[in-house]
Length: 498
Image: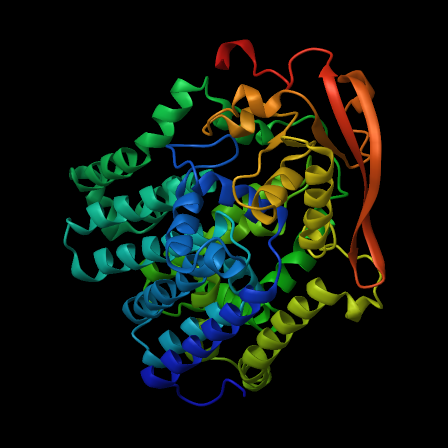
């Protein structure tokens, strides 16, 4: 199936629903990543904030598990379904900004074939609700532009607030909106009215639970995330990763169209000045910052999440609005035709690879440690050892394995991370009797942690277990029966957080 011709609303809806159905199937049999399992534990203890991120990802997971239970599909269900309102928002925003039903249809389909959206909603992270909220920021600004009604600023504030509840990256919408207002002369009048400031208050009110939680916990989440912005030294080693990863995450035909669309919006005068500036400001404000960030630290590909709805609109502009010379028109048409099959093919290939490893000849790849293939079997082995040795609790070293074991071990099994106790500050501490006597310690062999012999006076190795994907051994774990802790049974929290 290729994206070609003029798409009706019905065709777009059916295409989006088919892609959603494909993702639901893939979500059902793909094991959780360690981040998903970690966020799932958050959903059991909803709070105004967490050590790593704001709380909306936990709410999204909680909604899905209320419907489909504590299963892989349940964890991912609501995240995948967010694509439906996201697609509507991008469709409607494109129609308002550029007045083209064909471009609106293309934008909705382009959004759905992007690997960032396809994989980024199946694998539940804060990026899924962030991208959904970002699409509604664009929609509300487009409604404001077309209607001229100040009340739309309240909706803008609500959308920005939802984005802030998803991820701190949403703070960039502040400068984006300010640039938009200053760069378009007819929009500057809004700065002399109370409406933008009331919208800001709405966003602040929605975000306030995160601020209150941080204030109660010595600003640990803000310190962790905003600490990434420090400049220690400059290097070029990370900037070369940016373009290839964004080409892959946007899907190559859509990325090419988006680049052409941004060029057209900058130089060719397609659409109104306000529409052109809005899309460019949304894309380039974040992009310029992350290019700068890459000069001193790695930039993960998913950090660009807020710009993907705008990129889909830019791609639609190139496909259906911009006027090209013959060569440019042929190239745009070719990208348009191949966007859907390439996007679906990349997504299916990714799912097959992370589950089987067959496409790399069963060798290691970038996903092998993060996707929990083999964890269910590993957890079964650990549970058998726990029962055999009468251990009351399982101790893990990293947060990822802790999340995995809490998800895949029988419900109610005591599983605790020995280190980084701050990550679990919203959850109740285990009962003292669960930490008494013999415990099972899962040692991943990492040099990141002190050896178990420094933590417990009695250490008895009872097994060596492996996590495998087909013939590939991903990780090897030493399972120790431990007792008589040298200090606290679990590493203590910092004094100010106790």
